[in-house]
Amino acid sequence: MLIGTADPEALAADAPYVTSLATEPLVCRGVELLQAVYEVHSAARLDLLPPALHPVNPPAITLTVLTARESEAGPFALAETRIVCRSGVRSRGFQVSCFVQGAAAGRLLADRWGFKARAAEIEVRPRHLGTTAVVRCDGAPVLDLRMLHPQAISAADVQFTDSMQLARTAAGHRLVQVERAYSIETVERGRPSLRVFDGAALGEPRLRPTQPVSALALTGELTIRPVRYVCRADISAFEGTERVG
Amino acid sequence: MKFGIFFELSVPQPLARDAEMKTYQDALEQCRLADELGFTTAWAVEHHFLQEYSHCSAPEVFLTAAAMSTERIRVGHGGVVCVPQINHPIRVAERAAVLDIVSGGRLDVGTARASTITELGGFRADPDSTKISWDEYVHVLPRLWTEERTAYEGTTFSFPERPVVPKPVQDPHPPLWVTVTSPGTERDAADRGIGCLGVAAASFKEQEARTADYRKRVQQCDPVGAVVNDQVATMNYLFCHEDDAVASRIGGAMFTGFGLLNSHLLWAREVYPTPAYRSLGNLAAGSVAQIRHDDPGERRPIPDGIAIGSPDQIIKAIGIWESIGVDAINFLLNTTDLVPQEQVLASMRLFAAEVMPHFEKEAR
Image (cartoon, rainbow over all chains, first blue to last red):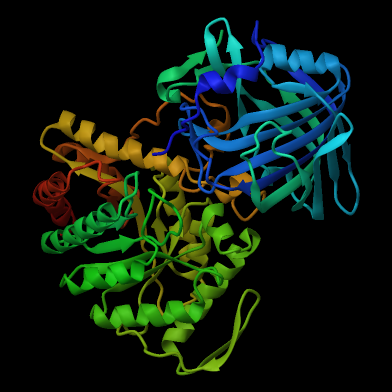
C-alpha cells in the first residue's frame, strides 16, 4: 500500500496557524460552483502527500471555484486545488492551494478550518453554453476553467469529498478534516477544459494535468461544518486521528 | 451449499516481477488443491491497471492454466468486462467457447462493467453507457454461442452477419452470471434469468433482502439465454484454523488488507457524477455517507458471517448464509501475500475436512 512521502515540516511552511478550530458551521447561501477533476502526471504522486495520506491510481486533482452571495463573513469567492487521496479508508482531498476573495471570509476560513487562503480575484460565470471560472493573481490569470457540453443530472448523482487541510496548531502540525454539506438547487455535468493552469502560482508546480475526467456546475447552499477530526500528518490516520471536542 | 474460490491476484508493493510470478503460481497451486478437496468453482476477476489490488488482467489465460491442471473444478470468469472499448463481444464469445472446449465444458461466464475510473478512463470508455453495453452483451453472447451465423445492430456496438466459431461444449451454452456490487443489479440479473454473482461483502440482512427479491423476480424472467441460471452466489473470505485467535489474527490481516486496498481504488462515482454508478464499488450499499464523514481513524471491523475462525465458527456463519437462500459462497484466500502459502493451503484442507462435510450432510 502506497503512502505519501512529503515532509510535513516542509509542507507546513506556508500553512495557516489555527488558534481555535471551528465549533460553529459557516452557512453560505447563493452559491455558484464549478468543479473539475483532472488526472495529473504520476511522477510526483507520493512526494505531494504527507505520510498520513494515501494516493489514488491514477493520481487526480479536484479544482473547485465558487462564489457565495451571502455568509456570516459576508459575500466571498473561493478557489482551491486538492489532490484526490485517502485518509485511512476514507475518500478525501488534500488541499494544496486556496485563494479567497473577501478578506473577512479568508481570515475566518484560515483561522478556524486551516484554509490556505491567499487573496485573488475570482469569478464564476454560469452560461447556458457552460459555466466558466477565472482566478487572477495581481491581474494575471492563474486558472481559467470551463465546462463544455453541460447536461442536467440529479443531485443524487453527485458525491462530494471532504478535505484534509494542513495547519499549524498549538499541538503541532495537524491535518484538519473539513466537512462540507451541499444543498443543491441545480446541477449539471460536462467536460472540463483548462485554458490556464499555472501550477506554480497555484502552489504546486509539480501538478501537471494530463487527462480531463469530469466537470460539474451547481447552484445551491454550502455549509462548512464544525471540525470533528484532526490527524497528525506524519503517521497513518489509524494511529494519528484525534477527535475534536 | 457450493464452495468456490475467488482470485483478485493482488501483488504487494513495491512491485516485482518475481512477486507477480509467485502470486500466479500460488493461485494455480490453490486451484489444484481446491480441485482435490471438492471446491466447485475457481473464479478469476478481470481488472486492468489496478496496481497491487488486482493483477488479473487476462483471466481467460489464467483460467486456461487452471483448467489444464485440474480435473473437476469449474472455472469462472468473474466477470468479463462488457464494455466494447475493453472487450469486443465477439472476442468474449470466442475466448469463452475455446476455454469451455479445452476445459471439457467446465466454464461459467460472469459478466461485469468495471467500476473504477482507472479502468474506464484507461480505455476511454463512457461510464454513462456501461449498463447499456452490459445489457447488449448478455443478450448477444448466448446468440453467438448458439446461432450458426449472427448479425447485430445495437447502441454500443454492431457487427454484420458472421459465423462465430468455435461453439462451446456445454449445450446450449455455459451458465451466465453477473457480478453484483451496485444495488439493483440483482434485479437486472433476475429479469434476464442469469445468476447473481456477489463480489461485494454484503451483510446478512442486505443479502437476505437481495436474495428474496431475486428469487421472486427470476420466476417471471425473460431469459437472455437458452437456459436460466437462477443461482445466487456470494463472496466471502476464508481463513480456517483450529485456534480461533490465530485465525482472527492471520485472517483478520487479510480481511483488513483487502478492505484497505479496495477503499483506495478510484471509483467512477467519486470523480464522475452519473446515475450509472450508484454505489462506491465493492462497499456495501448505504455506506457512501459514512465514507464521507466517519472517523478516518476507524478501521472496518470484521462483520458477522465472514469465514475467518475455527471450523465451528465458520459452520455457524455458513449456516446463516445457507438459511437466507444463498446457493454458493466464493472465498478470497489471500491478499498481497499477507498469508503465507502453506497457511492458505492448510486453511483450505481444514475447511474441507471439518466444514464441508457438515454441508454435504445437510444437503443429503
